[in-house]
Image: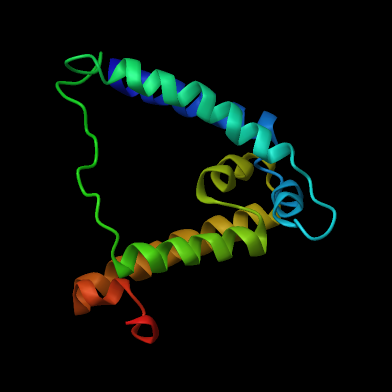
Length: 149
């Protein structure tokens, strides 16, 4: 039960940070991305503040033998950059730039009941389901569109 409560507390803290930082407001995100127009740099400050907390905390925490509530750390070991990663990053960036949501803030924004947040999350979940079915049906190649292979 303790790991579940810790995950809930971390998620709640993350959601509060996203809300207070303006990350759940698509207009704020799009304003940050509009570097040639009415640029709003405040989102960069949110990101820098997050990194300022995360970087030293990560170094301190990973010096431990194991996390407080788990047997071992689950840190990704893959370091290669492949086509699927690049295509996914481009799609993520384009989606973020077009609608001003990325997955975490969109889920937090569901609490507002805004139709844009609801529509985005439904489309995101549908895209994840389609990808899963495609990968299972036609194999690993389905994760990268044919046009970019």
